[in-house]
Image (cartoon, rainbow, N blue to C red):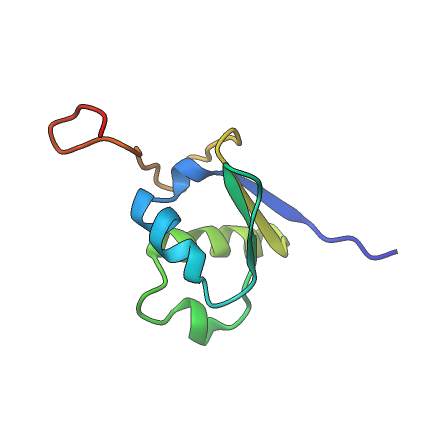
Length: 99
């Protein structure tokens, strides 16, 4: 029986533009996880993950996942945040009130 490890991260570790604009065109396997998250394969191709256009927060999460021996990342809005990754606030305009 084959098993894989999955890193579970809050979607708060993704900026809103990354989540809404980049995740849908991710150049490797990435699938919607219901309404509030995604399953993302931990890409081993450094040429892809280091190229321009792959957001820093995605590359940083992949580095954490690789370090922890995980093959997938589950991004979930209710998952915990970890201190070593930045957190982003969604739906806030420049004035500080909800968009």
